[in-house]
Image (cartoon, rainbow, N blue to C red; front, side, top):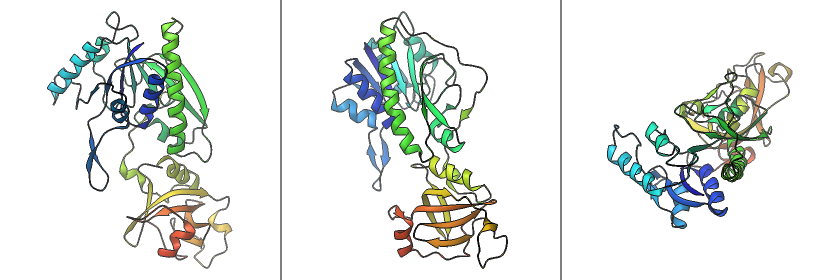
Amino acid sequence: MKVIFAGTPEFARVALERLHASGHTIALVLTQPDRPAGRGLKLQSSSVKQFALEHGIPVAQPRSLKLDGKFPEDAASARQAIADAQADVMVVAAYGLILPQWVLDAMAPPRAKFGCLNIHGSLLPRWRGAAPIHRAIELGDPETGVTIMQMDAGLDTGDMLLMHTMAIEPTDTTATLHDRMADLGGKLIVLALDQAAGGHLKPIRQPVEGVTYAHKIEKHEAAIDWMLDAQTIVRRVRAFNPFPVATVVHQGEVIKVWSAQAAQVRPADLTTDLAPSPLPGTILAVAPEGIVVTAMNSIAILTELQRPGGKRLAVADFLRGFPLQVGQVLA
């Protein structure tokens, strides 16, 4: 099958690699423009672009697809590239640009056979939107999955074509869950195209009940709120690993918290020399295994930390260069 692929990050690259390996012809890749990255802020190509260039696949990087927007020349050039590709289907995975109606029309029958298919990282209709993996962990969902969806003009509202469920493990972070879901998404989109070619895909309308929106992750969400209970804090630490990474502030330094645990005791159950009800965020104990901190009616244990400009370190190593003391309060 002749495919146009639209995607940008590693999640999308895995799917592109699977499609390429399965024998489909990738006629065109759409991906985000190169962005400054690293300490030197050098322009860096997306994972999808790097794969495409390595395999001689044509690449377009419009800054916008809106014909009446800020970059109409980019959109017009992309429209011509899509028309020239004469593809059977467009596969979209974490592209980063909303497809305007003209793209959907350009890929609709009879111009193209199968329209635009989206690889979405949730069990729709739960977690429509930008950050479904993060939000599923943050809210404590026991499972998630990947949905192959027929795209329409709405935000992740199209008919479902294929769906597969996977468990969210208690230790999963966004990083670990992302990798498993990227692999699953690559397998499902190949299966979807094979079934589409054989006429075996059956669209299913999304239920109207159970719709939730996975709003984009903002950097300000990283700051740990000790007024939350420990279970919620730990879920947020897991959800924000690897971005934006949960943080605490101590003596003016912003410290990243890469991993944490919720203890099975309450602050009142611990014997300390502190006041009977220490403020949330108060350090109750410092040990090589973890830093014990009060949360709302609960205890959190920080186990992997990072100072600005430093490396991620287990607590035992972190404490050698940054001592913490019982009674200090983390903001």
